[in-house]
Picture (cartoon, helix red, strand yellow):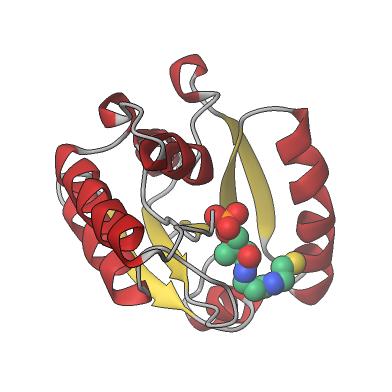
Length: 170
Ligand code: PNS
C-alpha cells in the first residue's frame, strides 16, 4: 500500500488544504492528514480543536484519515509506514520555505519522498494565517473555509478580541 501524509498546523483547516488533500487521495492508496501539535507554537485553536475540525472536514473524502503527531514528521512516517510527504505549494516563497525541510526529511528518512502539488489557482492566495488576519479585522473569509470552520473562527475571534488576547499563529 502506498501511504502518504499531508502534514500541517491546520490552524484552521481551509478549503485550500482540503483541495490538496483530495488531490493527494487520488494519487495514493491512503492519505493521513496529520496535525502537528508542537506545544511551543502559539495557535488560535488547540490541537484537539484542529484535529476535530479536520476529522469533520475530511469525513466525506475516501481513503483519507486524520491523525495528530508531536515530534519529528519523519518519526511519524516511520511509525505509520508512510512513503510520501505531500505539501501544497502556492508560490515560490512556499518552495523556498519547504525545500530545506524536504532535504532534511530526506536525510532523516531516506525512504520517504516529498511530493509537491501546486495549489489550485483559486486557492493560491489562501492561508490560515491570512484568513485569520482578515477575519480579525472584520473581513469576509467565508469563501475560504468550510462553513463550520468559519463559524468556529468567528466565535474564537470574538472571544479573543473581547478578552484582549490577539489571535496569532499560522
Ligand atoms: O502548516 P505548517 O505550519 O506549514 O506545518 C508545518 C509542519 C507541521 C508540517 C512542520 O513544522 C513539521 O513537519 N513539524 C514537525 C517537526 C519536524 O519534523 N521538524 C523538522 C522538519 S524538517
